[in-house]
Length: 385
Image (tube, rainbow, N blue to C red; front, side, top):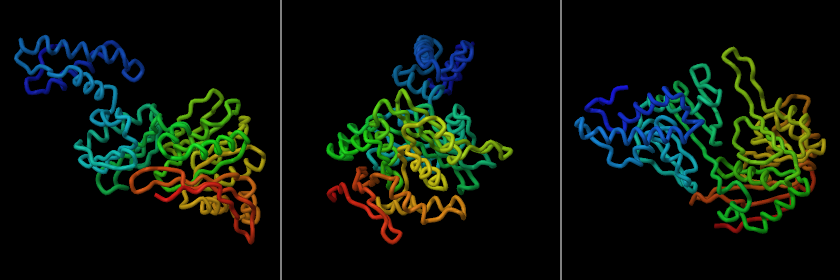
């Protein structure tokens, strides 16, 4: 391997190529052995500086920063890695190579970063490499869960006007239990105790709210608060619920192959989950005919938990009663509405304020059906801010 770099190349670019060569030669996978990759990067940075002055090339001024940059390119996600390493960044999205944003505390900001179309495609392909999913002209959308639990969503032209559009949503460790959410001001301690008691009693909980209101984060915290002896089976289109429990099984749907076969739907997963002896069935998001399968599961006595998009807790119940009708003409509202009222014990509604703060604003409990409308009792309502 030659030590003579191209005179015009930046020091970090020169070191990056040498690190890539060594990783290939020594068969080191930086994703599986990050410490070995870091040792190689540090060695090559020092090696570059040892020979830089003698060969008339620019030395590396900040060796630590250069090591981080090199590792971000060869093992991470390049220029995006610094934001993904930032514990305050909740979400990152790319509208165009030169229009990149992050969200911190629910508030978005544009970052001073400009990429190229080719580099965006390379980053997406690197992200998808370990997921088994693809994005191409035949499948211009993709949802995938990255190894760190982040959710990736990509849309490509000609569905978009010109550029690849990328959303990367992260789930921060600080908010993965109810205590963390209490500390963040998302709910008061007495509400956290109410929810823990409900879960311990085997009640079914529906979490509602608008997009980015914190539904999935709260659902994950509720799962973490379930009694440790419970066996939990989760069903999601894409893995998002990052919960570490000994007796937990996570199931994920699958996209159809290029031939249009092999798809695994949420409805199929719910049916399979019931064969796994769950003490609680969790559906990441209910938005289609799988609502019927959830209701049927709850009617068998299996407690459940799920999220649903809605503008209020009461609207969430109405929507859950309407979605099963999508399953076929033989599904009657006369069965569905009373089933929802009897199977769902609590509806917890989340909202995000203008400041970006996410919190629980309402909790209701169904009390019955009057004239085809589910009646509710309010257990908690947050003070307006």
